[in-house]
Length: 473
Image (cartoon, rainbow, N blue to C red; front, side, top):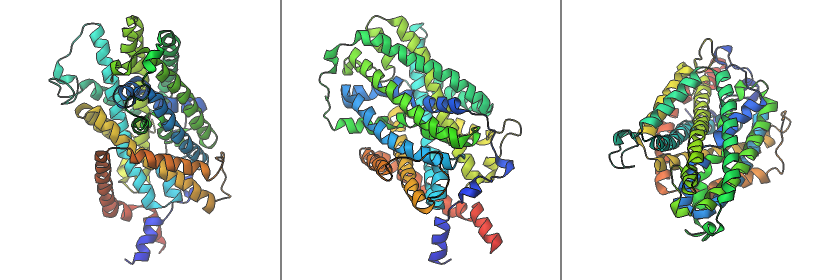
């Protein structure tokens, strides 16, 4: 094969028109409306960020300035959200950033981001499940139930710890719910997100009366540069709309509803994040904030153990929605890649009645359960961020390219200030990536190397576009 032919294969793009003509044998059921999509987005954004990571980062990385970390992450996320919104109005199909990259930048770019998201979404589901487990253990302590040490966490996270059994069960239970069908998922998310938002409002309304301004001093105990490190760490808590956009194909009107749902969900989440972090760091000195169950222990410290228990119960419900959203995301990316032939099409087989990809759902459920059960939460959290930031860069570049190559393509939503907004997203994402530990880069590059081996060994020759080119040659 000549270099020109290889270049043609790597850069071949999936036509937008072809995206709208997927085989009926590999289609998903459409039943999600605007507010169900928004609920899935909010469900993916609000969860571990408020109930686990806010306390963990404030305690060990930033101190009270964790608020600024969330705002920085939110600005970067907002720029990318506008790019996602424009693409969602053009290509309302399963796969999100993978599909956007495929139609704009070519097959290799699409593969790169799709393969990347397979690991990242599974890791997010795992780290959030570990957060759920922390609140569950807090509840057990309140009723004086003490499970054996070996099942309380991964090795190295505490004396006698071997595996986090509760985190594994949350992952497997989420996989079961996903296998029941998207209509059931939409209903659960709507109810659970309503409970979660009400809980955050309760936290703010009660906690504001127990704020001690002295707790905000010093505001930068680890230095002002730690704010950026904190932003890179909490970043995965502000991009749940990305995973939500993978459900585009299951929306009743994806072109109209998805752009709105993306923007609504991020706006709602950022308001709640700002208020909640102000309350948390005002109620307790950052050195005393619990890294695993921050709000529950904060209310317990001010003499409100009953509220602490309510928060723990609500946190479990709320964080489970994050596991659900990202597990939904990874199964839809895997499904889309398999339908395009870049992974075996056996994975794209949907349930004959429920029209969901049950095969990949259970594989993802088991994989995330193993990761949640045997890895430390810090390691898993750092692993998630670099991949999602890379996805943001790809989508931001792709929207610029698509404006130039397909300026007349129908767009339900056009992001403002082109190309300033996507360039802001790219710049913030690159800076946050630079802030991550070198170990995260090593893990990412190893996963990328494996992906390239899979692509050149299997995907390039099995791609549907390759088959079409061969058959017409």
